[in-house]
Length: 237
Length: 298
Ligand SMILES: Nc1ncnc2c1ncn2[C@@H]1O[C@H](COP(=O)(O)OP(=O)(O)O)[C@@H](O)[C@H]1O
Ligand SMILES: [Mg+2]
Image (cartoon, rainbow over all chains, first blue to last red; front, top):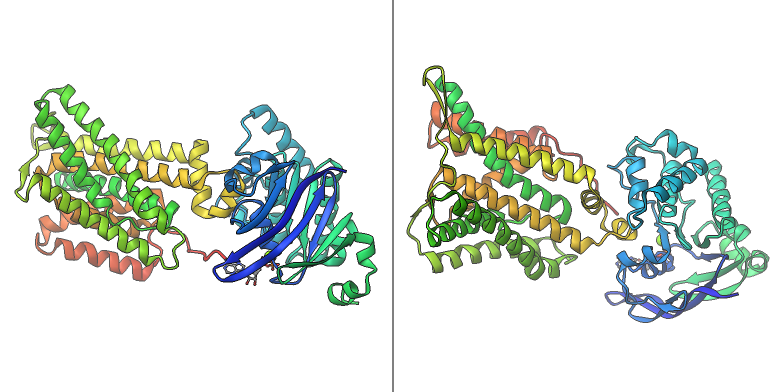
């Protein structure tokens, strides 16, 4: 299997606080890889660094064999790496349709846009119903779907998802995880950050466990689901 | 009839405030900073027109058009340069006061450079609008050319801006950056470039406002932009800072109130009345007439 994403010895500081302490991991093409860890472990920092929103202090990020560590954030998405950020961060004062259009900002083909839009509306019928509604007026679950639809509009090869189940009712949580599996089946690689470790491990191929800025464990998701320490710390068993 | 004349004059002055306020409000909405030097861009624009039309012999239509275009272009460049040198390095600074104080510094800098080059004496600005205007009802109601042009220009600007923001990709990118710079970056939007474009547009509008202002009130000095700048800031806040239609409404209200209170109440008190209205509006509706509730983004 060839890695689509390789992270090597990555460190990130906020001022004097070191949020990532030299982490290394990789994501292979076609996989769902889960990154689990408690609040404050450094999961969001990891995804922000991958997307170029914050700069790595040391270390290397390789995407499809090319080093992207120093590439500005706005150039990352057109390379095929999209992110569904923590807290969804939809554009509240724009309509659902305008949000989806922003997702396709780097794509210039209007025929392709229509086609992708139809696909997304088929996957998320609620978004179609509410296409002219302001995104800020959607429910949390609907906003999550919009954030996903928006990221998919850019035709990503890999999608980074930051706690997509956060704050959602159980029905929505199941729906969101089903959608993640569907997206992956369509050929999109997924790096999934979650505090809901059980759910994440149940759909992931492999997983990494992050603790205060360091990766403390890695392995097949199925193995980690049965790992005693993991069960205790993250699965509440 | 005279009331109508005053109302139209107020509308015209208000249109100038509105054009300046549009620049203020766009920069605030998108870059999240108050560019207190914005008023001085007006002054720079006026001196450019003054110098260029002086050099090529003013009065000719070509000369006027050329000087206004040059003023708009150079003010845009000045806006971009100021943002790049003075404001961008402070973006993300711990305190928003840093950039505010820098903007005040830029304001003094521009005023004093103008003082150095042109001196403190008031120059007489020859209007860029030579059209005499219209007269109605057997000459009882006369509207000056500059008044009509000002109102028309501001309407055209407002419509163009709305179309630009709602119909173009760059305009939508501005809205996205205004809401959430991080999320905009994730969409592939170049935030720095978008902010740069905002400054270019805002400063170009200041140049247009300058041409109109100095045509209506032809006394040019290094401080010519200061008061209109403050009034336009008040207009932007009154309308709801960050809102484009708000800036327009705020500007018009301010201009009309100023002229009517100058005429019917007292010319000394008119500014006090203008600022008094601001205070009252902000007490009743802290976000301004069209302002949205400000949400703190986490
Ligand atoms: N903008 C910031 N400034 C300073 N410290 C931050 C900032 N963002 C996150 N941190 C700190 O970095 C650490 C990792 O945060 P984060 O990546 O958000 O964790 P997670 O997403 O796993 O909850 C935490 O200790 C957090 O307090
Ligand atoms: Mg997080």
